[in-house]
Amino acid sequence: MIGLPASRTPTMGAVKPGAAMIEAAQLSVDYGVGEVLSDVDLSIADGDLVGIVGPSGSGKSTLLKALLGTVAPSTGTVVRRSGLTVGLVPQVEQIDWSFPVTVAECVGMARARGWRTPWIRRAERVEICEVLERLGLEGLGHRHIRDLSGGQQQRVFLARALFTKAEVIFLDEPTSGLDVRTRHDVLHLLDELNQQGLTIVLTTHDLNGIAAHLPKIVCLNTRIIGAGSPDEVLVPDVLERTYGSPMHILEHGGMRVVVDAPLGVVRDAGEATA
Image 1 (spheres, rainbow, N blue to C red):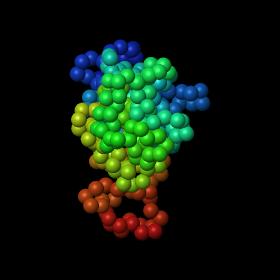
Image 2 (cartoon, one colour):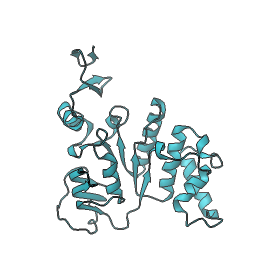
Image 3 (cartoon, rainbow, N blue to C red):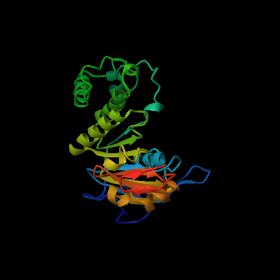
Image 4 (cartoon, rainbow, N blue to C red):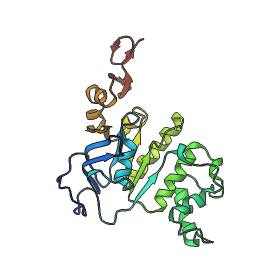
């Protein structure tokens, strides 16, 4: 579930069995130039598929890192279930694609024990093939990662996270720079993995292509503005307070579509003119 944690006690410790996998209470992060996150309360439960949305500079990536444990809170706490394994899928744009590594090697490096040779064990090679097959990358293990399509590259880094046997996977803008069809392919893949029991937390700027299809959304602008289902969160008041400008919700084909305030007048629920 998404919401206020049961306790706001500012102490570290193990989450009680059956409670949240990760729980942030009164979380604030300050990089020395003002708070990037302020008084965030958020619970991530087993089996969640959560999207964090907000404008650039709203703290989305910082919240992801704080939940992951790579950024320390300035105040407040982040408590993770004892023994919890987590994985991160970074933005594709942040990857150095000139690095001389194959798909299989890229996945295997997630468990690398240094640069000893051979550093991928025979049993691990079998696991790598199984993970690649699971993600539709069968037969591509020998390919250089720079020779793959954007969607395939995203799947490779998702395979890395799965190879670590992560129980929770964090994805930072997983559809950034991808075309519409590939974005939907990635979304369907994430939904399938979630249905198989994987807990997923992602950031996205794509309100319509991604966020509107997620079961749970967190609207963030330094602090949490709203959290819940798309019907609860994708509403004009919450979106305007999140993005700082008026936004309209249209109905198209039975689905909600978020648009910036039009220059003209919204004639009806399905048409806007400039």
